[in-house]
Image 1 (cartoon, rainbow, N blue to C red):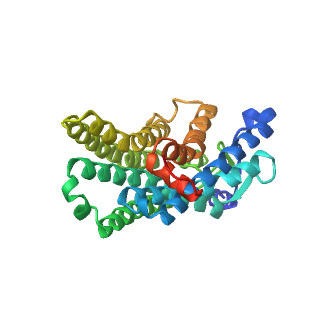
Image 2 (cartoon, rainbow, N blue to C red):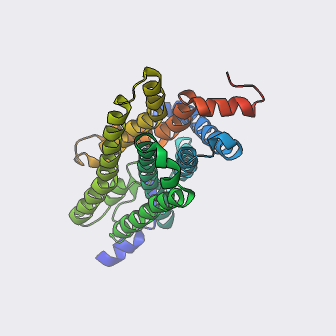
Image 3 (tube, rainbow, N blue to C red):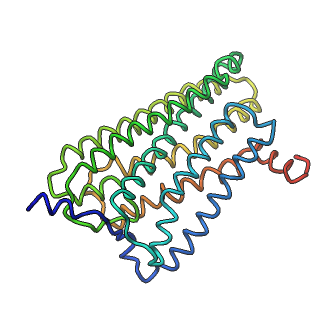
Length: 309
């Protein structure tokens, strides 16, 4: 009889933003505008990098890969979230939930390691400029991107397999998408082993890349401080500022979401944190790189037929 009950759960229902029921249309409008800006910004960045020969460098290759990954990452979550906000479709099949979780984890982790690759690129450019073109050759760049994607795929396969092997007794997901912990909470059995696995993976895919980026920037800053001219130091800092801003927000939000104790925040707080890394962070990437980066701004001016100053 118990086994039969487990097989009945073939569909889940999202309960995301149920506490904000009166403001659903406002949230829909805000998220739709942010989503449109995110898509437009990332598409513009990828297009500009592909078409402008001045941006055919390893740094911008990694940026275009990050923008592509961020675009797919948002496509996995936001369209369904928007439809559920206006009451169109708040249910998702078991297979659909597993698929959404797989792609969310894959591209979320890929983004983490792409940011690490970008940190390594900045380290080589500033600390070893004479050998930069030799070290950061096309093959090395493709290997770093391939490694980031491979880690994402392996971790996603491990996580999704472990979660969907669990027997489920409830259908209401206390979230606006199929994130790991909210889905695990629907299980009929103790999920301590799964929780431990999630924490170990979170530490490996967040703390390790953060540590590598931190080491890169310690070495970068020590090299910049050795530059004799103030103008040279300013230019070196400027090339890192955009990446460092995105890194701090991206790793900061992900760490709060996945490295905190599971009972520390309320459901509404968890959802607000999730909104930050599923809606705000992907938008931050094109905004920061277009507003703070002179080379990208110059490329945009050239694309519009205007001469950069």
